[in-house]
Structure formats: structure tokens, C-alpha cells
Image 1 (cartoon, rainbow, N blue to C red):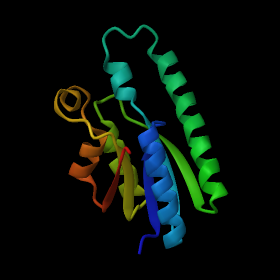
Image 2 (cartoon, rainbow, N blue to C red):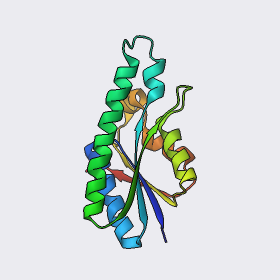
Image 3 (cartoon, rainbow, N blue to C red):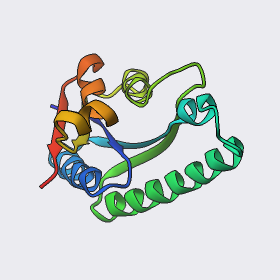
Length: 148
């Protein structure tokens, strides 16, 4: 049923659970898996008081590549056909969900998997929700994996 599964990770325990679910689905469906990590350049370069935006961006890119490499190894060990991609939001205000959904359309994914922290109330209001943003604009079915 699914041939191209895209999973968005961020290095958190919740996204690790989403990755495990995506790997299991990819094995079961004999699907190709694409793992993406997004660096939010928009938030770095639009913040007024960031003294070394380029340095911060580079450290986030390095951290993202390490997270992707670890995820790649896990998927390869499970025997899943895999590719990874580091995404970057543009500085014109693109948000992380936009970058993920755009990649899902371009690749093209037929299932998107993401973790959700399940924040509510003030925490949700202040921090927002990448998962909610994906839900609002995903062109394909979305599997949300909630933190245990």
C-alpha cells in the first residue's frame, strides 16, 4: 500500500519512536524510507539579537547531520531501503512544517510519519506544534506517533 514513507525527526525521544514506527512500516510494506531533519534558518536569521547567526546555523546543520546519520544506521540495520535529507527553512518566514510538507510533495511520499509531544494549553500556545502544522497541510496520510 505505501511505497514511499517520509519520517520527520528532530533528535527527541518522541521522534525516535516515530522513526522506529516508520522503519517497521517500511519493512512491512517493502517501502522506501526517507528521513528528514529540518534546520529552522528562518528563526535564526529573523531574530534581532543573534550575534553569530551563521555560526549557530552551522552548528545546527552539524547536529542535524549527526542525527540523520544515526537514523540512517538504524534503518540500514533493519534492512530498509533508505535515504536522508537535511532540510532548511528559507529566511522569508517558511516554517518547519512547510519544509516537511514540501519535501513530502516533491519526493513524493505516500505516507508521512512524525512524532507529537502532546503539549496542551500554555505550552502548546508558546511552543506551537510542528505536528499540527503538518496535519493542516499534508497532502498525504499522516501517522502521528505520540510520546509514551
